[in-house]
Structure formats: structure tokens, C-alpha cells
Amino acid sequence: RARPPAEKDVADLRAFAAEQLGLNDPQAWDWPYVAEKLKEATSMDSLTGLPNRQRFEEDVTAAVHKARKDKSRYALFCLVIDNLPQISATHGLTGADAFVKSLADTLGKAFGAATLSRFSDAAFTALVPGLEAEKAQELAQQACQQVHDQLFALPGGKTQQTTLSIGVAMI
Image (cartoon, rainbow, N blue to C red; front, top):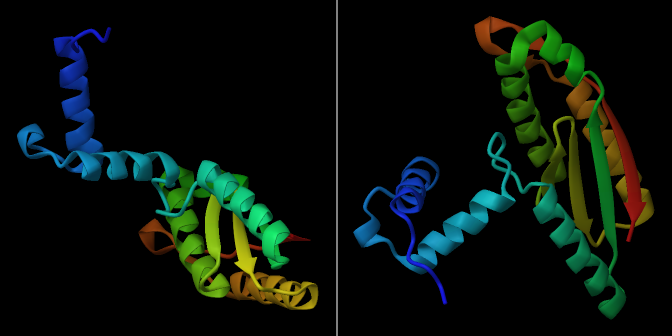
């Protein structure tokens, strides 16, 4: 038998809902909407707005099952920022966060309709359907070049260049 929520539990839930989900009036909560927002909050990276590692793992699992079922192909990219620790040390966490957000935008443009995810602090992943190995290699080279050629804006009018290490696996 479920126990009624303690007052502190209710207060904590209301605070979380207001701060993280933008829901200020618990009487007006649409519970399916709340459930959707909670799922979104646990599957998205809060800095970039991209799917997080957990969501990426779910997407890859679904892609593997689909590939086995209908013989479809996917290219799986792992993209690692080569100098993020140095950027953090030089520009602080605020600068590193601005850099990562800007890099995420650039990668989103480079990979188009792919499922781009933030895998960890310095790593992104992309899952691209319908791509053969040769085209995947070309896309990886193009993404590396795009990132290398860009100067990323940082707070205080500073800029930063970077390089990526990219691995590609075919599913």
C-alpha cells in the first residue's frame, strides 16, 4: 500500500517542476505533459539540448534491431574534442560551456538529419541511417575539416580553434 507523500516530498517535487520543467501551478498540471517533460529532462543534455548518452544507447539499440530486421545500414560516428581540457583550463567552465554549445551547433549542421548526441563532456556521437562505408568516411573528413576551419566564439570576445578525432563503425 502506497504511503501518502510527505510535505517535504511534495515541496521538492513542486520546486523541481517549477525550476526544471517550467510548471508553476500544480493544480493545472497535465500529467501526460509532465511525464513527457520528465522523460525529456532525463534523456537530453542540459547544456546542448542534444540527446544524452542514455538516449544515444537507446537509439543505437533500436538501430541494431532495425538493421538486423530489414538489412538497413547505419554509420555510427564517435567524435572527440581533442583539446577540451586545455580550453577549460584557459577559458574556465563558462568558456568551455560556450565552446561546447557552439561546437554542437556546428556538428548538427555537418551531420544534418543524423541523430547527434552528447556522449560525454568531450565526446559526441552521430548515428546516420542509409550510409555506406565510403560515404561515412567522406562525411567524417568533411566534419573534421569544418570544425578545424571554424573559429568558435567565446565570452569576452575571444575565439578558439579545435580539432576532432573521429571513429566510424558500420552497423
